[in-house]
Image (cartoon, rainbow, N blue to C red; front, side, top):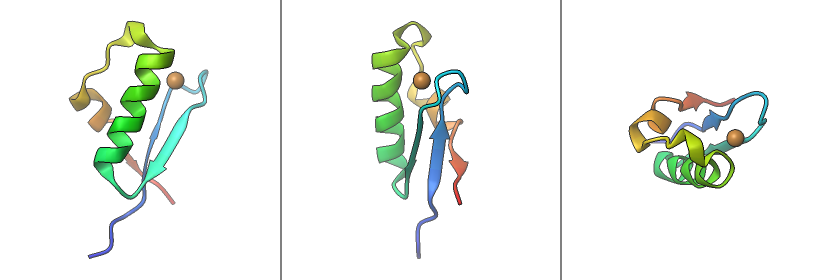
Length: 56
Ligand SMILES: [Cu+2]
């Protein structure tokens, strides 16, 4: 089965967005971004997972 392309978008003020077919990779990249740019948010993996949206 073909995996769908998914994305995670950060705050519009930030503008960061990642896309991947691999959900775990997506979460990893988003957490790495959050830790670097928004360490005060302290996003958990579950919070990041809930931000996943289908991408075109
Ligand atoms: Cu950001």
